[in-house]
Image (cartoon, rainbow, N blue to C red; front, side):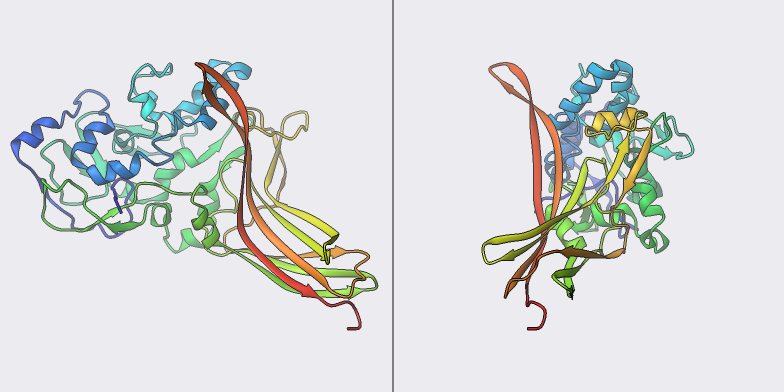
Length: 394
């Protein structure tokens, strides 16, 4: 496994001192007056760079789903509203204002130098909570470290959830909390116990901070820089538990009881953009015949000022005026659902409960030199349970 560094968790108290030969130092062209490309960082931090470049952070600008939403936002709301998106998806625009993405560094998305140029976060500043110091000094969680390529300032900030909150918490001009992942965590038992975002999303793994030809006196762990979240379905499956806990008859109606629990996620399930939702599909069959089906959503539904449900990312970011409903599971919540089925008279009934993670959006693809908008529907099975139900009196 290849690994990395940036937002670190615990375990980096007294870490490596990095030194290297003069010829390798000469190759590290750290820009003292502006942003440094991740390709430069990758010359020394090879394993970290290899993992990061495959992450959604690295593709925050370039991925087709973002590009589709960004272009739609520009068309519907204008350049000024759309540029708001770049502060997180191409955050180097905060210094240099390359809103047309003419510079390669802008198209690197959430690049190495951006995170390691953040010197402070002030969440009380709703307009822009991030403080950056661009140049030859890099900020990170390693203590007692020296580098031949740049200055280093160790900060506790890079191990704290407040660092992530600068992009994963957003309230629009109407005062609606469109993104609330940080506040969901802040109100949870995870925050009370000191469990930070980085502990789950950037865990320590065996690996080197620097290349093999650079001296590393101690420490054999780095923080995993794929920054996996809901796109890591195995991680989601590990967090959510589904159980059929029983049933009860009332005449020709059978009630089934199904429990869904958010056991190992420090925020709501699902979290992030309101387009992320989960659906519990419950079906009752008599042999091959469908007796009944119920779909129970776990989602947050946002409305515009005309009470119209919003279906696209760019719409909620700009136009969300109220929240109609929020049926998501809070951290550590166990919810038992009572689901009735009528006309359940068969000799033997088969009950199925299947929990899906669902996301409907659109993407931009290029064919024959032309860009096309295409619908995208993602649906992943998170958990499933099955059982048989005998009719009343048997």
